[in-house]
Length: 370
Ligand code: SAM
Ligand code: MD0
Ligand code: SF4
Image (cartoon, rainbow, N blue to C red):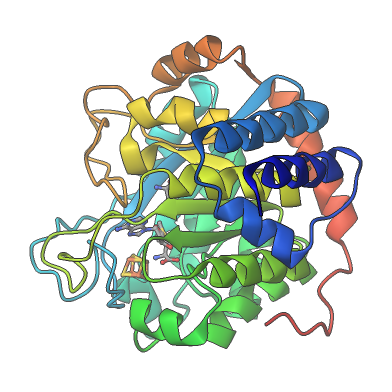
């Protein structure tokens, strides 16, 4: 295509989501490959306009508590994989997590995410393995007004049901990729279908679900296009992408870091494909200094807000910006202001989640997802 034709077709493609029309696989692929700074700027502007159309200038804030860094799995990209004897391990008590959660809620976060490795103390223990996790969710739910998310890895159906009854609204479990061969390289020994099915089940049980991609781990543009299609079939409520950050002492330590622009491009395309969904800008990849570019790409949730001074870790950047207070709501608000955005009210977030929960009831039954 001549530059002029490209510009023309770009405008036509970008105008489709604003008119409520969906993009074809070829158009999504075209957008993901944009390389001209001016064309990318147009894409980002469209993503921001769509965010405004659906969410005004309000952004949701999502606090992150890494409850246990023990894990029985050996994901090749993860610092906390079982085989990494150099990664710091801790397991916080229910009281420590409740206290950190109250602190986050007081600081104005809308959602608290309780994340765990597949801690052998839960997964490999005899008896009622997940009673402790259910107790934790119950305790945090009683102590704060915040909406709750759990990210504990793959859970059996009855445990998901119990977690829902205990007070969690969200279940997060990222597939990273929807290519089975790549999945097997990233998550060796884990089952692709079981991981995906857990999200279908969670939705069927009335929980909201977050699906996520890792970027820069060997995926192709057409893999990303296919992931978008799977996310559409899953009808995921929150969708994310994070650039891969190579971790020391892991099999992927020497892997080239992801193209820093790629995450922003994918965020923007996600906004065009899923204009009414929640799309995070994580502080866990580039810290506070990377927040503006993610918001400029159309994200509408700031994730990985972590209270300082409590020995809590991040995931992709285990300690970046935590103890210097740059992952707090106060630090985030300054950036929001710079972008002419503001934190939403608590009621607005609750209303959004209630509306979505009403919309999903009955979804996911008997559908083939991938
Ligand atoms: N153990 C649970 C699981 O794996 O579902 C919950 C942990 S969740 C916080 C871990 C997520 O962080 C992964 O699914 C991945 O998307 C992201 N992550 C982990 N290591 C990363 C890295 N090195 N770079 C970027 N993202 C990473
Ligand atoms: C984040 N570090 O929000 C967290 C994490 C897990 N559910 C989320 C990857 O970026
Ligand atoms: Fe464990 Fe999750 Fe890390 Fe995989 S990504 S090693 S399951 S903590």
